[in-house]
Length: 139
Image (cartoon, rainbow, N blue to C red; front, side, top):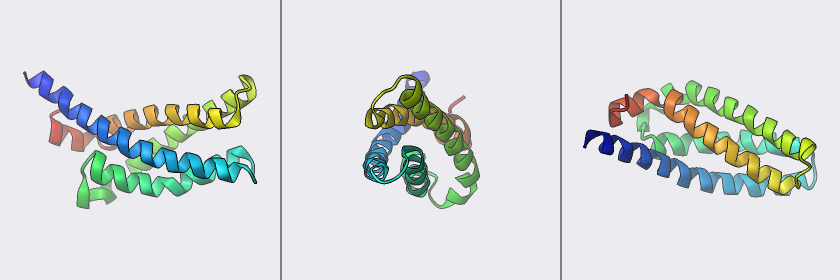
């Protein structure tokens, strides 16, 4: 029974992360697409991820992982997680565009999926790990 409760809690964090991430990613995607019409796709990607980092941190801290007033102590671990996920995003974007010759906009979308999966993993198991252990009893 306890194992089922743990899974529900993890699913709730994952669901919140997915909803917030989808809204944030959708806005970021639109911003990237519009920006890439006038500048390099890689620069557009970087600018979008930098701008949406702060919104993402705020929303995930308050809603997905529920740290509330203690956000400051999670900033550095979140930044590290975000940077690692961004490196995976940029690598996959380059791979999709250069090696697989996939359309730029589809490449953005596919690399964002990779970013979301890696970002959730790093945030759940690293950046917000202590909070998850306290609130959800994750082992």
